[in-house]
Length: 579
Ligand SMILES: *[C@@H]1O[C@H](CO)[C@@H](O)[C@H](O)[C@H]1NC(C)=O
Ligand SMILES: *[C@@H]1O[C@H](CO)[C@@H](O)[C@H](O)[C@H]1NC(C)=O
Ligand SMILES: *[C@@H]1O[C@H](CO)[C@@H](O)[C@H](O)[C@H]1NC(C)=O
Ligand SMILES: *[C@@H]1O[C@H](CO)[C@@H](O)[C@H](O)[C@H]1NC(C)=O
Ligand SMILES: *[C@@H]1O[C@H](CO)[C@@H](O)[C@H](O)[C@H]1NC(C)=O
Ligand SMILES: *[C@@H]1O[C@H](CO)[C@@H](O)[C@H](O)[C@H]1NC(C)=O
Ligand SMILES: [Zn+2]
Ligand SMILES: [Zn+2]
Image (cartoon, rainbow, N blue to C red; front, top):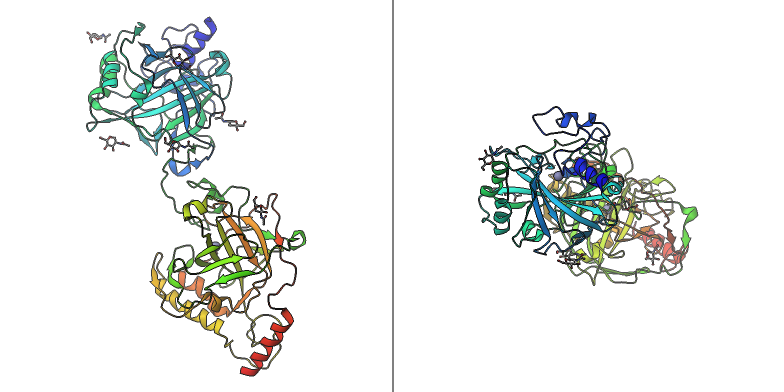
């Protein structure tokens, strides 16, 4: 009993006159915060300290941070007493009646008290946590111990204590809230006299309409000596708005001012946010010219980029498994020469959007009908390759992605569904200019002209638009007659690899069934060079991601829809005939 109240005193700022010379303070004594580390037995100089400045651009979303369950927060009878203990004003709760669980906490926590931190009557703010460098006027801490643990056991457990931090904003807009008016009516400069609360007010009424699904989470410490590193911190994103006539009563009536600890070093700790927390949108990039290059994409808000089924990947042909269910695709309206609506320079790629509801893909072992939304490109530079997927570590010059969404889902649902999207990936390579046909082995004719087939026409038409979208975010209507079939040419669409993966750009949603075709589209080298040249950016591809335990499947080797030999002969004949 003595030990546990001593620990509460040392760690939770419960009493002023503690045993063992612990007269620490915020100002006006020897042991101010910069000396707390020297207090014998304290952890205040360690590396997992609180409070901190929460830098939202460094916060990572944690999808395990589900909603909290608050037990008896609505009860109007659990706030038992209030005391000015010389360090803060603290409200004690009825024992074993109030609980916190969920919110990504691994255990149920038993809530014992809440208390406050504030600045001074000159309107200097005094919250402990800061958000992006901003200190709020006040902060409320609701303290809970892991259920079943004594106070001593709790401070010895790295997650023994859960503190809910609510930032408090002083505003003139808010009405004077009755629960806060009642609470502040109990404020006094008379230390060490515990006063019973006789009014019916609940914790919920004090928290008000703060959205409790939006919060930050990190592992830290108590913010008063001994600064035990035992706290799972939750700092809610939205502040409680209280009229400033009430907030200023805290320093005025208690005589306590600037009772907050300065922010501590993060020391490589990661701060997480619940999925509902709005985080600023951050630019991402492929190289090092911005903060969020591919190795940092997982830190972006709502990011899945560190998941276990990420794309692109390197396809090791020797470990590919043949799957005879991978049959022929049905491409609907791929021949429509008016299906491409616009072409846009996104700053990361060149993207062609399609008219809604016309182009479709099915078959190919997909199991669903998918609507084709857009296609876009990945490239390196004029001197090196830039496909996203690699085959036996061979990188192709470019890669084209045709993005399709399951027809029965809307886009938001598709992004959350493991097979919500189907992307068709085609490698693009320079055609050999000394040969007339496209594809391999079309026979060494003695023509030395550029390829006259319609596919090349389509590429020439397409790249003419690149001059019109040189500025990032520019978008123009496509009026030329170009079909996807024209761009794909006679590339073999029956022989492909299949695996489960993700989008290759943030948020890297793991919603993609990938099809990577084995044969490459052959395009004039000069056409390919236009992508880096006109857009002025290069190397727009994500590095290969770990395969983890995924299997890559393949169509039966050598399959070719209409019978390879006949088509091949036919094409050769046609070419010979027309030239
Ligand atoms: C979490 O709470 C919010 C608002 O109270 C609600 O809209 C949402 O459905 C809840 N989520 C879960 C998973 O319970
Ligand atoms: C909630 O409070 C009531 C009394 O106010 C108590 O009877 C009940 O046990 C409490 N619930 C829990 C889960 O502790
Ligand atoms: C919950 O448990 C997991 C696994 O032991 C641990 O990694 C995580 O830090 C714990 N979270 C909290 C809030 O205690
Ligand atoms: C805090 O209060 C000020 C003054 O009323 C207001 O302008 C501001 O929007 C509030 N901040 C938040 C985050 O609610
Ligand atoms: C405490 O407050 C009372 C009235 O609010 C005031 O008269 C008194 O001087 C204060 N005492 C201290 C020590 O500040
Ligand atoms: C993709 O994942 C689904 C569900 O886990 C599984 O049934 C399917 O076989 C996987 N497909 C491939 C190509 O791995
Ligand atoms: Zn506190
Ligand atoms: Zn892509």
